[in-house]
Length: 107
Image (tube, rainbow, N blue to C red; front, side, top):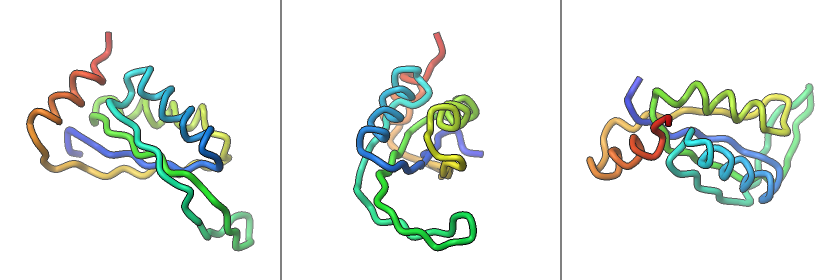
């Protein structure tokens, strides 16, 4: 796994997305969390095709902090099975990556 990651989740309201973003950044599990939406999601759930508006939260974090971020998302999320998808950041500006490291450092 790369040293730096983006982590994506979705939720059912702007307020829920803002709370997930804020709580993870406050806990230093992510250096940044961006919220966008609404987006329209169509998906299978419990044997039925559903369509709903959702808001995306995209976190920037380190591989070291990922397990705690995943646990946080699952604990704080209102969905039974929250989306948690990880993308590796293979490279980026050294200053930005250093900032992610610094802001997710455990005290």
